[in-house]
Structure formats: C-alpha cells, structure tokens
Image 1 (cartoon, rainbow, N blue to C red):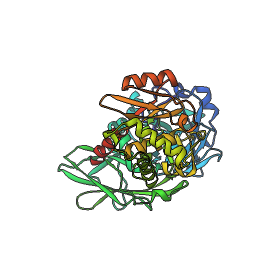
Image 2: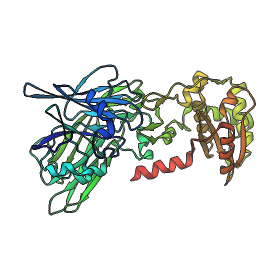
Image 3: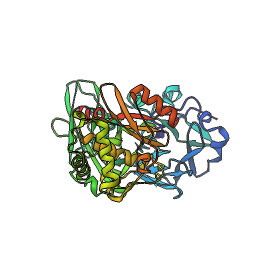
Image 4: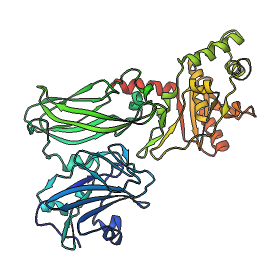
Length: 474
C-alpha cells in the first residue's frame, strides 16, 4: 500500500546507467511479491534490479536502538557490486557509510548520501520525482530514487553543501561524479571517450559573479590538477578534470591498487565550498577497458600504439637494413610490409605464436600486452599482434587502422587517399593463407562483414591521435 507520509523522510540516492528508471509505484519495478519477500521487521530492504534480468543487489536500512545503519548485499550478479572500488560479491551484507562510492550492477559510481531530507510532501507525489514512500506492517520505509544528471539539475539545486569549515551558502553542489575504477594504462587519453576523473555541477546562488576552482589529485598516481569556471549570478556550471599523471607511475602498477582521490571546490578567495576524499581502485597498466557502463571505450586501444618503442624501432631498422630503406609512403607499401614480415619470421627469428585471448572480466577489462612484450615473449593474441603491426606501420609515418570484428581484431593500412589494405595478423603468425583485402573503406568494411560476420569498430590511428590532441586541449 502506498501512502503519503505525514512527516519528513530520509532517502538514499541510487542511479541506473545514468538514467531515471522509476516511474509510478515501486511495485512496477520490482514486482510486489519480490519486494515484500525482502522485508523484515528490523530492516528496510530495497532491491536494486535491472529492467531485464534478475536482482543484482539489495540495499538495507536498519533502525535499532535509536541507531540507523546501512548495508548493501550483492546477489551474485554478473557485473558485481562495488563499494569504494571493491567488489563485494560473496561477502554477504557489507555496511556502508555516508560518502562511500557505490556501484551496484556496474552502474556509474555515485556517492552514498542517506541524510537528505524532503519537507514538502506534495513533491513526493510528483511522478517525475520518482520518490516512493511505502508503509508496510506499520513501518515507514525509506524510498529509492534513481538519479541522472538531469534529475539532479532539476531537483537537488537547494541541497545544503557540507564543507571542511562552515557551510558556504553562496553555492549549491548540484552533483558530483568521479571514476571509482581508474584504468592506469589509458588514463592520459580518457578524454578520447569523453570521460573525466571527476565532474561536478555547481550553482552560484549569489547576486554577483564568482570564479570557482576544482582541484583534484590521486595520491601517488597523479599530480595535483585544477580547472577554473566563471559563473554568473544564479548560473549553474559543470567543471570536469583529469589531473596530470606522475610520469612513469602507470608502468609500476601491475595489480589492482587501492588509492584515494582528493578533491575540493574553492572560490576566488580560497574559501572551501566542498572537500572530499574518495576511495578508488587503479587498474593494472595492461588492463584495457572495452566498455564502461554501456559506453564504448574501444578508442582507448590507442594507448597500445607505441611507434617510438625501442623494440618497434629495432624491428623497423632491421627491415630497412634488409631492403635498403623503409621510407613509408615514398616507396612500395607492400614491399615494406613483406620486409617486416621477413624479419619477423626468418632473419631474426621473431616467430610470434598465436595465443587465445584471455576472458573479458566482469568490469569490461582485458589484459593486453604491449607490442614490445609481444616481440620479447614471441607470443600474442589477435589484438596484441594487431597493435604490434599498427605500431610499426605508424612508426613509418603511414596511417594504420585497428579493426574490431566479432571476437577478433585485424589491422589495416591506408594505401592512398581513399583505399586501404587490411590483413589478419593471426594468419601471418600462423604461417597460413593470409586473409587480406584491398579497396575503399566501405569495400573493406563489407569484406570484414562477409568474412568475419560483422564489424565492431574501425579506428584509424591518425584520427585517434588528432582527437586526443584536440580534446586534451579543451
């Protein structure tokens, strides 16, 4: 039974892939029977559920002896439930606290804030608010709210902001989002997938303009970075920041590393508006993130393009010694590719053995060795040998192409203004008949679909390089 409360209630902040998913009564999301099955007399339980599929986590609010505690439990979901970057699958109920980073079912992490208050009961009946108070067995249950940035902009503009000193009422923090799991290898090119380490939306409630500064740093991984934003009176604005990396630090990360993201917002006089210290997880240097919360991150493969690596330069130099020179587009392209192949297989015994790819993990990551490691170990899976060839082609100042097809990857090279030559690097390493094709981009894509059953992405290295430069300058 759904009733309008007669007093203030607390609510927990939840989101689902950044979109509002609650409409009308909560039973429509979970099913009345499923929801009641998780209720207890001492605990108020909230089931976080995918629209298609089973439960992936349960949120619990326990009121006992005038004390309120909060818990979350993963339901053996495929994507897991992360608390401060740690996967809690198999750990049972885990207590959570205000300020913790929560990511149930692989959604974009959000800050757990259970202490907000709603004082206008008429707002609770608004369908767009998606705040559903429930009374069952005489117990008033906390409701769930699914939040998107648009929702926050509309409904949370007047939430008072806590600070390290006194509340600074000239500003309202509309929202704050940070990356709770940080890929270390491709970190410096996160711009290419429009991802920032920390993004805040803040409103100037004052009658005069202000210049605000967002400052952030990951302890032991980045330098301190900052970005300014000028806000006119009563204007809201977004500030996003990726602080600069500590040179050489990603190469040191060979396993998951727990770390702290410290960030704060200050005004032009140095007054602190908001200051936080978040728990995050930094992924190993060789972890590629293919997708994140439904977003295609395949462009991050550019981080494995290493044309200036000494191993790639030696391979190119050995091929140049074999045929006299390797001038790129100034000479026959196929002849140069054959020279590289000859060196790889025969003259210098770089016999690369194909290995089956490792599994993509629940968090959408895959371990991928860098080209120099592939040459050194003399073995590699398809994406590894593809990036090895893409790197040496790029080192010749020719445009290479990384092509993703279902369950596989191949490489290409732009031969002239509108034509490409694509080939399968696995066929090369296996010394079998090489699947190859030359034609326009559209013809090559059609060939890929016919031979491999589809195409997932077509990334030209020169385009990715230009995109990184352009977006980083923003």
